[in-house]
Length: 337
Image (cartoon, rainbow, N blue to C red; front, top):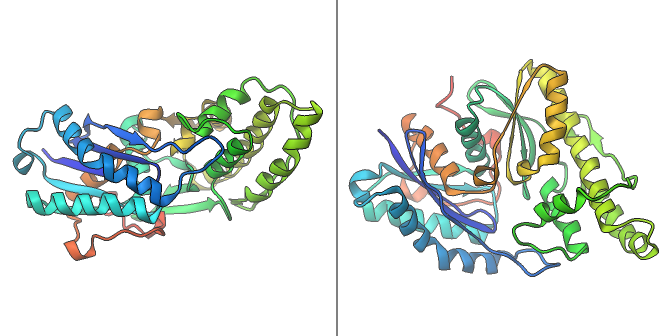
């Protein structure tokens, strides 16, 4: 039996999870919320993580029923990147400390791979085409030759960042998340405002769409021609249609019959609904998880660490740093054939 403790802190959530042979023993997390109309800043987010990380480690151990981590934990996994520098540093320092304190090997995990491996564990998907959508990343991925190959990605900002920044225009609350609040408001929308549709081969671009709706929203709302719900609905429908298009192309190319959505935006039920329709038309099956595992969490880092540990992958302490740039396709996926 292999038991891994994982620490995730690449953005505004700090989480600690413990996994033993595919079973999630504990997965507490804490979220930093900025004021409405504002985004979270690295320095403020890092302070939040420093204030909460140790207590989350203790809570995770307690919930998992682990009394002697020196004997019961096999390794420490943490998010090396990608992400925001200051918050990443907190997770790296805590992981290095625990590794030395408990005399355990340390496993630097790619955040994106953590999402993928958690999605595969929870849903049972075997070899899916993966749509990874979050506040910091937008990628269509497929596995080949021990690499998670990127078929297509955003050329500028991530889809989650696009949604979050429009939520600021509307002064929506950041709790539980701006994207969630846009999703709820979009359910009431009835009128579609035409927005740019920017698919470039297998890649997408969201910054022009965001600029358009940011510039036009005040006038459209003031005139009463469109409601905030209409604009949320219009933005969601447009950007999600773009994502479905490039995912469908990747499915056709890879001849896969499975689609897996991971990342924080993957919780969006409208995105799941649109993807399910496309998958059904191609005789494919959609796999998705809820907010317990879609949103950043420690267990996903523990699961990727579990796979790495069993494949004999570990790193010396001096190599256990953090980086804001760490592409999904840079990881050697030695645990898959």
